[in-house]
Length: 560
Image (cartoon, rainbow, N blue to C red; front, side):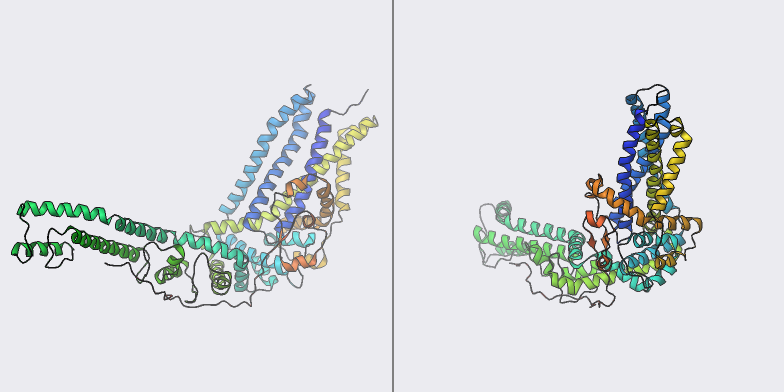
């Protein structure tokens, strides 16, 4: 009897191998990102890639175990079997991608207020630990450290993490504020965009009032001409062709009526003096336009403005009333000497605005951390609480799913190899299912042993305080495999397709203290740049000053 390896098994061997050259590097990349100071955008991107790869892992397992063998047994060709496999694999990938997203959302939605508050505080401590270390352990780029840090919120309670960080809650809030704002240049760009957004309605109303004033003034000659024609018609309707002359009673009545209508004419004004009449009308139009402009500014910006129609943005922001409105909108105490504009100079922003931004952000974070648990389930804070739970639980979930996918497909890959090897030797025993499963299981065990599962003593002493039960032991076991997995992943990263994917993903963000360790074991450090993150400086003083006007002398629109 001739033994022959089915074509689909050769194809599955190749596809599974390609999958492993992506999944294992992704697993170590995942640890590198989540063990650092990842932003929410970084986490969202990594989470989407992880969900997709999990879908691929499940689809490969299903078609390799169920679909290909069944249709091969029915006598289908490899091409026909592949069509059936794709028909099922694609929905599996989509459903897994969507299902894991829904799982994360539901887990956050149905979490209790206590869990949300716990997660919020744990995340503050975890990010500080990632940057500055804990309990005498300096941060590093070692796989054990990165994996341990990423899983801390799921393994230890928040009060333990805060204690291990060596920081008080106000200090953690301040460090988080600095981290969220970024360095001075990044914060300045964000501040400028936010300021323009907040002041856009006021500037729009100023521009509208300014344009209305200028348009009215530009059109005053046409309006004066119309007013003159109307005035002459009214005179003819009362006096015919005989125009009252100065000094007569009729002339005095007409002058009085003109003054009531806002025309500042003298008693000697000749009623047929068109040029003087149009000048008086023009002045009246300017006065009315200036009054309307001033009212619009007072209503939308505030009293005390010295803005002139047609002023540019720089002049607009330099106005004292605008500066007062800026401080009200920002809800910040900024020294009166600081001119707050979107184009604020870097030095002025660094010294006058950045400390106030840090103080405001830190106060908001500390206020949130101090809320009662029930407040995290209210409409105002629901999203914050749900996001905190997802941020605390996602790293360990992603780590376990990625590791499980890699180990399972190492098992399947070994089974396919055994089938090919047994077929080449024409051995029915070696190609039998029991033999393949035993060999694959043995290969998996040897691979795990070869990874030399171990956790450094100092980190192990921290993880041993976990009270997460079986789940905690599973996570700890996954962490222990990271050094060996990093070693394998380095090779796959250097020679596999991961390099093409890696260039489109966010680089890990490490503190300067972690970068100083410069351990070469982190593969991503060799394949992509790392981003240093600003560390909170508790000793940095925050300047505060009461908000008041900046006296900038400017004239009102001319009244005549």
